[in-house]
Length: 100
Image 1 (cartoon, rainbow, N blue to C red):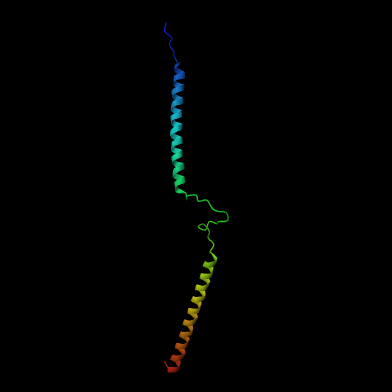
Image 2: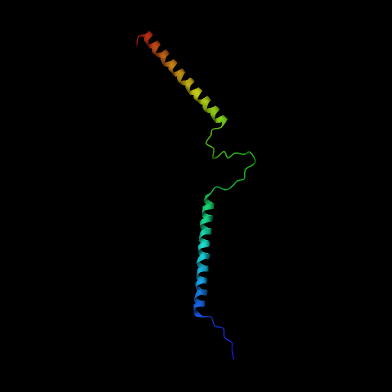
């Protein structure tokens, strides 16, 4: 007599269902890993900072030298405007004396 193993049909269905479910989960995990990879690729690379180092790229504050150059540029512009106003006033006065 030969011993035959037989699996009940409902257990076979459950086994194949669990295989399909495992396959579905594997595909879902692979998809989510790909989405995560795409999202992390879009981020800036992480660069470790030294102690006391600031992230100057994100800072909207102007540095001291930028403020100084802006102030110097403003003073230079004001001086040029004042010089131009004086020259125009001198020209008008000269024209009045000449009788134009």
